[in-house]
Length: 136
Length: 400
Image (cartoon, rainbow over all chains, first blue to last red):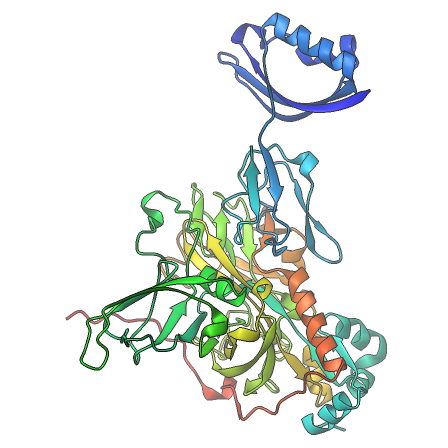
């Protein structure tokens, strides 16, 4: 069975220089999409990935990560749009760092592409009608 | 060849009127020419849906037993203070009013989750609202405290009365400083990180009638999902600004004061709004029909985003310090493209006003007119035009 999961990976400092994502692809046939990455040489690295592949491959990949000392958390935070409150003004478009909001033309309605959302929450408070909500 | 409003109303009543939106008229005028388009079209409908802070509603709550006189005391609706300097049970709630205990910008930038605009939205939605009133008590109005739920259906009057709406043009706001600023034009990122504008452009009422030749006092309009009227020119109405060759103002210019029965309005067109670090307001839906009385009026109504220019203003320094400097101009076509160039830098743009919803308003008004449900009114007096010689006065302080 093919699955897709969003995970938050915490790398201890000693693992930062290892090609971990490459191993996930090569050894476990997982497709990855980087949603957020923050790797500073002398500190912990953080990577938010969407991983897709066969369930068995995914589970073995997670075992591999746990085995080498990578902390794994499911991405539990989700940002959703309250469709009844959204006025389609577009104030969110320049706030979102990943371009999850786009204008549909010619209607100029604002699309929210949840698959591009990294749940950073930056859009929540600048939204004038407060249509964006964080769900845990 | 001209038409009169009476003739247009006759065609509306007979279901024969040709009604198009201010977006549709652009193409029709381009295809058929101004003369033919003016002959065919009876009404052009406009629309706008953006935050409009100088909005509010007055309510008459009915008399309690025993009676209470609010005047001189204090009144709160869902903890939001309402103005009560009237007779016993009349109050006015303004869109920007905040609960006394709202922390405002003490924790910067303040959230401003709930204010007068939200109260108006909840009233329009038919929700119960908590009324708390404190009074001094008199022989004829002995009661000193009143706490009760109220509902719009039980009020004698609930009237939306907005003293400045539908601004004819507005600034595109940017931030030249090196920190994020929180303004009524939204969150502005440092070093020209973004540019926010707020208009429906080619759909906006006063851009389609730049010299107020048809829109006047008494004009019947779409207001908050119901019917309203232009009551007066709005505050800060300033027809005397710089205009383009097409007559369209290139700076914030005319405004409308509008009024209508809140009981027949809809909450989706009166949306309580929060501007992070700034305050509360309300997003108001307004649509104005423009009777095509002449070719000249049609030419104005066929205005396109490309032909409307907005000034670009720095909200970190120039705006707060009331400096007249602008950083340039951008057309609404450029602003709506998603990026403009300011000081040689490409700046992403976003709108605070919803074009999609403005279009829905123009379409709704078009349908009302086509169905014969909405007749046009003859203005009882014009709005002051360029000839009025109005000067927009700043406040000069006189210390005492």
